[in-house]
Image 1 (cartoon, one colour):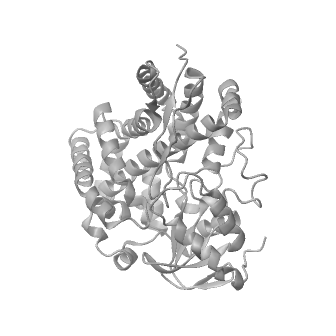
Image 2 (cartoon, one colour):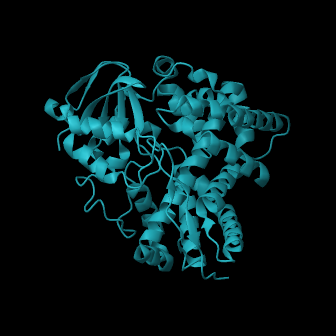
Image 3 (cartoon, one colour):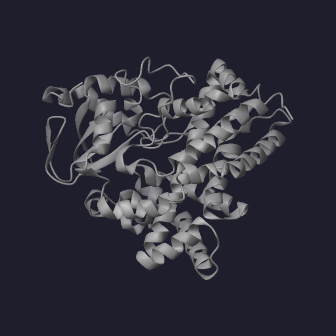
Length: 422
């Protein structure tokens, strides 16, 4: 397929109506038929939205991957946000996240990413496997206790959020209670990830955001005065000599929200998929060799991040279209991951499919920094959950995150555990 898209394809009125539906306030249980129709109608769609007055949405695998690799497109800059979302600096969590390495580019991004990425590479992460296994088993013990009476257990609340919070706390060197507290506060700030975050949500974030940032300042000061052999101590030493304290706090905020929200949402989405497909759950439960492929398939099939923005840094051409500096390009990775030009029978969930997460963790120089840890978490948890509770079944409809345009997940996922194996 050529990257050049004929101009007529961006003019579809139906495709624009679909785009507006993507910014719904109510969640959709299954947005994928809508994405498929959008991809078929307009691989590149000219869009208008109050948050980005001029831009394009791309929805094929090839175009989204090309966008992530293109050096002319960067994350949305803080300066651009001043025009696109006036007042965003009034929220300390928004200020920190949008000033983190996730939103930097070029040499500055490479330097910061190398500093943090040293602690998140596959080899280093693999060394934490035993600790992650211990956390998972302990949480599953708690879930078993909650479900012993036969009453429904909310997997989103009882397992997904605490699991992601405790693993993030493990990386940051936090005690379990503080990890859980900051994880709950981070969940309250999750709307910051939405590109069209409602004004009232920004206000609701102020108190929890302040608590998180205060806790991180205290953590950095403790590690400065009494360093340990851990990630925060090393980053504190490095940042205070080569950057500054605020940049360190910004990047720790990024680690908090990235380490809590996306993995927690992936747990809920993955459990839901497996509950709805007992045969696939059986394969994963009985065959340890498929676990890597199964986790990749969950991330491909129903990724937590559905939409990822980029911004043109200079005049350029993309897919045959003249793009101006400041134009926003939205990569609909949820549509791209089910592109039939990328994967055969894309709407079939198959845990034995050759492993590929597609663009579920973005791509290019901003590929998800925590990808290795996220995949390890899922590879540890899903088989254990299914073996511990082989008769686990849905106890009601899941409640999906709203608005859920950028980040998809289950706020509530009630299950009955039935038989418990000790």
